[in-house]
Image (cartoon, rainbow, N blue to C red; front, top):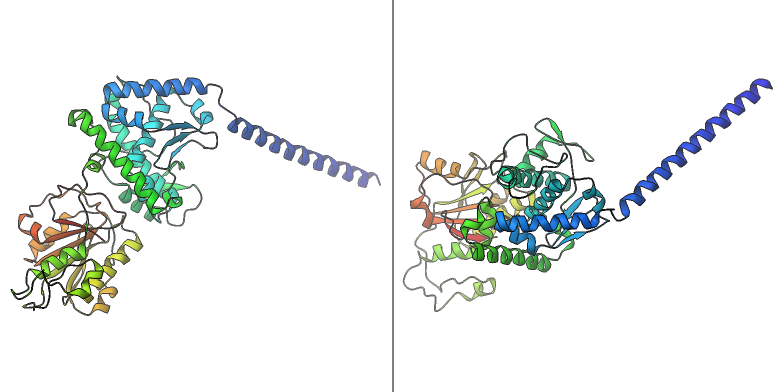
Length: 434
């Protein structure tokens, strides 16, 4: 009985300790939650600091200063750190209490860049955590590149924790970083994210636009464009130094025409004089196409080249839409394609695809970075002179360096629905949309 009594006492003590430990954990968690949800003790100090930052930026970096004056910055205890949905910036007062004033300013500028670069809209069906990391690489890279100029004018300091590149940012798009992250983190779950073999801290600060209707997203996008346009008009180019071209290009975006209309225009130039736009083919009117009335096309176009972007920034649904559109064009017009897939090189070439069903079977076997110059190198090396050239892409294709003067009039640049906005002064060809 002595042994049994001793055993029961030990068991009772162990259970008591376990219960006390569990209750302590619960109490500590509750205390932390209460502290997190309660107003920060220096909320007014934070607001005053943000006000000073706005004024300093107005004086020394007018573009961003004006934008900061226009964007609502809201204290929100339900937010974990700071975030934006494209309409405003919300920050946790508890989180900001832990930061120095310069670090708070860095975070606010970080969110402003998310808004201007429309990262909230461009996510699509991408993995949310990897998209956030990719976008953070871009905005933090932009801030770090200009921080040394701003330090003498405004308090701004990089926070100790965040998604930072291990090297100087060079203008790479969020879509390209996402493609690299996706490849490297295949199979990773939770908040574990690695980049070039090193772990990065995942911070959930962009709210995707999934809860917006298309109409609401269009209104927000238009408001951002109007805001940028207004600032540039008032400040001029001298007040927009260090502003990425992707943001400046928001002020002047080309009108995107449906690309089947542009191709129709090209095809109809080959129609003989008996055809007339004054007697259009009625069966095309409901599609929004203006096609001349009965006449004949001398020959089918033998050299239509369709270059399909298959780089890492292209989503699966975008690629499917590209191929579906080629199918529809081939079906509507008596023409066939040479189809080539490209990223930094032109590969997977399908020549003289005339069967409409065969178009949908054309698929890329590779994916990588993006360099639109590879298309023109391929044409030059193979001495190809297309009658019409269609480039289907999301717009994130790097800088065009090769001379293409003779091809501009023959080129239709088709940008996917959620692709990058292209400057109206683009020098590649006619700009169109899916």
